Length: 83
Image 1 (cartoon, one colour):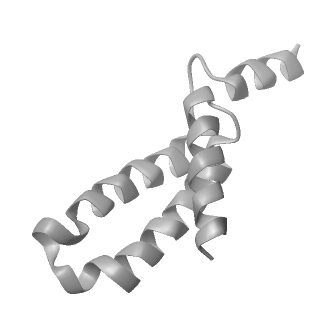
Image 2 (cartoon, helix red, strand yellow):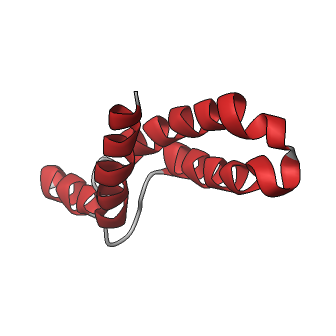
C-alpha cells in the first residue's frame, strides 16, 4: 500500500503543479489524506497530529470541486477542444 500512496503523491504532486488531471488527482489525494488521518494521525490529537493533514485535505477538496482554472494544462486542452 505504501508504494501506491508514494506513487500517487509523487506523480500526483507533479500533475497538480502542471495542472494536469487536477480533479482526478485531487480526489485521490482526498482519499489518501482521509486514510492517513483515520489510521495514523487521529490518535495523536489535533495539534501535532492531524491539523496539517486536515489543511491539506481542505486544499485537495477545493481542487476536487473547482479544478484548476488559469495557466494549467487542463485549461489549454479544454480551450483547444472548444475551437
